[in-house]
Image 1 (cartoon, rainbow over the protein chains, first blue to last red):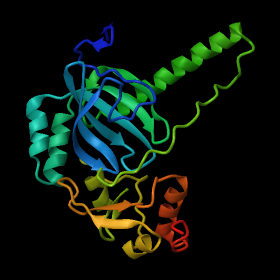
Image 2 (image 1 turned 90 degrees about the horizontal axis):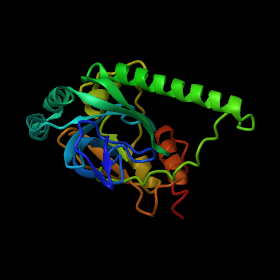
Image 3 (image 1 turned 45 degrees about the vertical axis):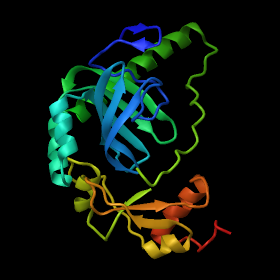
Length: 176
Length: 88
């Protein structure tokens, strides 16, 4: 991702900021449309840097921890999602629209997005969970290795990384 | 907070909440009576959506939905709540 000042370039990969809500994953993102929600937005369109992205909750829909996928929102697929007139047609439209997720993220209600990865290859609806979780596992493993290397050079660093202070519990809304 | 109307089986609830998915081993459902939530101070009302026709909303009309209210909400499912315990 190339950043020019505060403007982002158009990219097929959404830029994620840690601590943000998954449906508004950066300070310059705009929530365009919520297509499905259950307490929180679970499927929708978010705009960033002149590009529209489809976001959708992959797992943890009604849980305090979730995993999320992001991919380019192509208009025909989004139109089909918007036109779906019931649960079955919406599910079918989502499976079709979520055909090329490029970014995968983990989030919690209390801390927002905690970690995200850009996938090596776009993943479809059925493969994104396994591919995304494997990529996150690898990212965490690499981060732990880097920390251990740092700790060997700086022995005063703690053996465990202190967790950041949790955010307030999200405000529950009845219209989501 | 979102809930579903009726004592529906988890296998029927999952496709509504998680479109495209089917119930797995880790999926569970819990059940509560609307009257219990109302007696504890919650506002319960139908709010059907395009993707969830049996969607029901549970709201707390007395201020912020903090930890205390979240715990009360949870206890309304198993009946261990005391009616009106936070409202007064």
